[in-house]
Length: 65
Image (cartoon, rainbow, N blue to C red):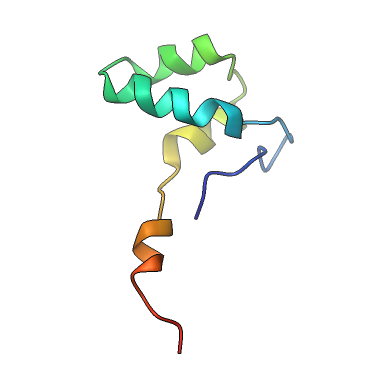
């Protein structure tokens, strides 16, 4: 599944922050501080960032009959 464009609960746009979040976390920054800097404050939005697993590449390996 691709990263959602909006939060499922409140509707805030999140997709524009995903790339920067990934880059900064890979540079060993604290996830909470990165989300604070990006302005992601609500629990519902933060949960999406912290629990997202990108399965698009995994799904692309399989053929649909």
